Image (cartoon, rainbow, N blue to C red; front, side):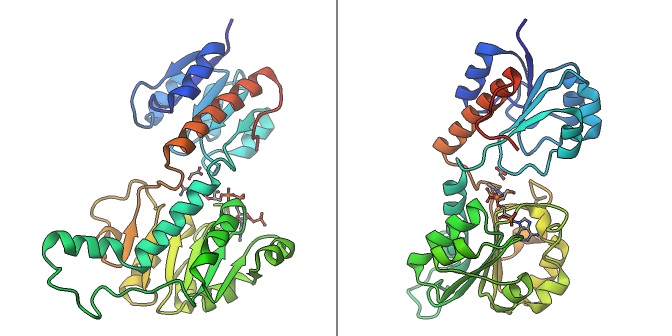
Length: 321
Ligand code: NAP
Ligand code: GLV
């Protein structure tokens, strides 16, 4: 008998689903949207594996419902904060994920978001469409450039380092970062400087959040941190919404404690249409598209399927947490 896999939506790139179909019996939530929790709970019982995304919360309750047959989880993401890893370890469930393949796409999107926010691209585009563009005007729609600025990166893992490399041609005065562990060798190699978080928030013109979401980074950016930032600082987050206390961010933006924000990730996702962040001209919100280029998302689907198949066969996965 073929192993059984629960797939949490029907629009993962074809290649992954086709690979899985060759070796496994699939039950697919037949909608191009995240499976509702109740449906997930009902259908996961007795399955050998799960193909999921960051939308799907894999917690104790769900693992209990899946039961002892569950051997493998494959998430089509590098972030794994939606999965209770401790519970998985205790139950001997292997977890595959998709690091590296999305690093370049996410770093590139981070630079795009930084430029869009700093140079006010969306605001300017709106003016062009709505008649605000009367003539070329010397000081109209002026933003701020990366050149000669100090850029601080919070979290210097795969994506953080690729962001740093892409910043160099923009000629910032300095690129600095903070991380959990000592990365002085990488820093030296890239010509960047490791400093403590407190120093970074006080001295950076741009702050880019690129760390993982965990107990230490949850609400890392809060009122007390915003109060220490420069009024000219621009904050960019392509990591996870929960790293920023959004209520405090809104207050900081309204009070002029920081200049602007560019957010690819928010809490919740999607952001309700009446959320103040969607109505501020100095905020650029994107719908979590960091890794969203066709090649990357296609390869993520293939890797997720391969991880699941390898996990079920008890052999090495492409990427296992
Ligand atoms: P990674 O290589 O594991 O890097 C994460 C970095 O975060 C690590 O270097 C880690 O430091 C650092 N970190 C963890 N806790 C920290 C803390 N308390 N203070 C400072 N740094 C801390 O992962 P990655 O591949 O770069 O991905 C990073 C995150 O980006 C993912 O976890 C995910 O949430 C997010 N992401 C978002 C998108 C999107 O679509 N917007 C796409 C991909 C990824 P150490 O090295 O010292 O452990
Ligand atoms: C996207 O946010 C990911 O973690 O892959």
